[in-house]
Image 1 (cartoon, rainbow, N blue to C red):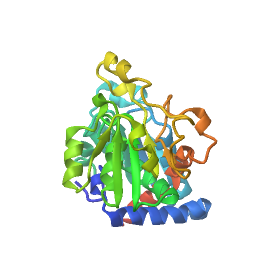
Image 2 (cartoon, rainbow, N blue to C red):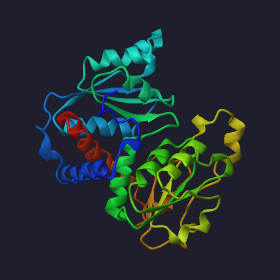
Image 3 (spheres, one colour):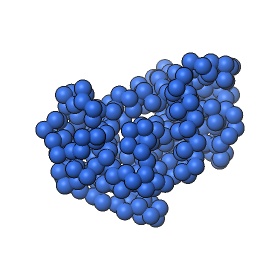
Image 4 (spheres, rainbow, N blue to C red):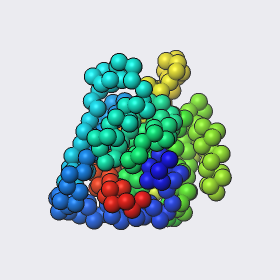
Amino acid sequence: MRDDHLITAKQLSREDVESVLDRAAEFDADPAAFGDRHEDAILGLCFFEPSTRTKMSFETAIKRLGGDTVDMGTVESSSVKKGESLADTARVIEGYADALVLRHPSQGAAKMVGEFVDVPLLNAGDGAGHHPTQTLLDLYTIRENAGLDDLTIGIMGDLKYGRTVHSLAHALTNFDADQHFVSPESLKLPRSVRYDLHEEGAMVREHTELEEILPSLDVLYVTRIQRERFPDENEYQEVAGEYGIDLETLGPAKDDLTVMHPLPRVDEIAPEVDDTDYATYFEQAHNGVPVRMALLDQLLEGDR
């Protein structure tokens, strides 16, 4: 597998993260100033699952750099519908592109495709596995609002199936961050993720009630309970709507608490929070463009 494939956040060192975030800050300051940076570069988009923010921010990022995209379209309109394998689809599209972005519902799909393609591959989410580019924009947002060291962060919601959570937790082990995980018992972090975090030196503190740790938090990262990941609808119904925050919930929080969410949200954060200084989730979504510009710039320059 090529070294410049980005499959999991476990590949990212502190130096890697800081390099991307520093470059992203340059793009963020004046994104329109880099329109000839990668003229003629083509980014191949292979999305086997619905996506709004990830797909559109990758499209915007490459176009801000002067490049363009080729898009396989929906699964229903592609040769996948005729029975073409994932590996063959990726190998065909790499013939048209300088780099590939893959989203797939199966955990491990990106790693498998990485064995077959010769252009850089970015994992844009593989089932309940990993989502490393989301993690980079999450870290950028955290750094801008709270800093990445001496940080106390609470991560709440679907920790079992939440790929953004798994990637973020791994990446935070590079920093002086105290991590607390809040979820129903049935949606706790998978044992494999807890094991890896322990191996990386992190202290995994798990809670079922946000109130236990809310006053100490600098950042609260909320996630949606993902109905589509549950093998049993009854299991989903047992926890649906169990975790949500509103202004009353946030009463004991620090005044400068940063509330984040990878989006889309359903009912985890009440709309009344949107207009407060706590709310950072729309800024977080915006940050997908400069961060992905920085990552694509490194890949296309061969710096990774």
